[in-house]
Image (cartoon, rainbow, N blue to C red; front, side):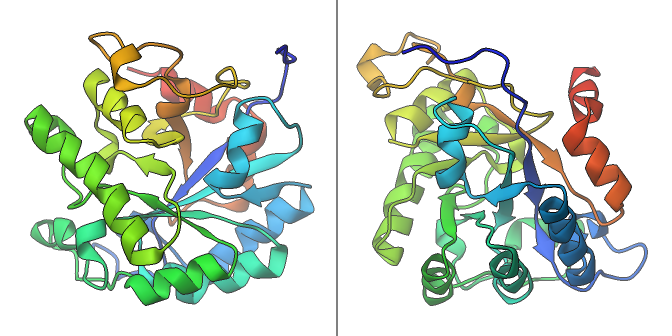
Length: 270
């Protein structure tokens, strides 16, 4: 099947918390966007003619099967404040988003940040995630325990990737088709594990927009069809860059990130 080669790049925005911003000097303060700022950002997307899409809805655009002025919306970790503060705004504009959840932390808190001095913040439980899905949103996988896959033996990393999908699907009674590497860290073998587990895409923290189309349409290769480095066919859909949105990201900066090569140049820096 032939696809046009000059499609516009697609941005996948990366958020974490949408909540009141912690006091100046608080650890990881930049990862929280205030509800007011988030509403203004989504309003800007709408005014510029963008459709905000979850990874489920974005995938056909990434593959070049569909064309349109779209942007991916993703939230890492599964914070309850995504449901409380982001969902009403998404619904107001008819947008959808993927929230990447940590399967062994449902209903808990962001324990991986506690050692950094960050205050505990509540994560959605299974019932709340089902409400998120019922509202037209998507849940993706962010490993079982939010661990750096690069620090684990391969067998443990594979379990973190594959078991997370199974646990979330059992808890939510819904398909989980999209993965996000915790901390953005991954190796070639982790790409192979993600594909073999049955995911359709995986996102990273590498900065940049996605050049499309990223891969030919067709069934994903089985583990046996992948080479020793997990390459097989194109791995582009499993190493997707994203565009970070920080506490201090202004509307003008967001426009630059979306409409220009600003983030692409950031990605090229050593």
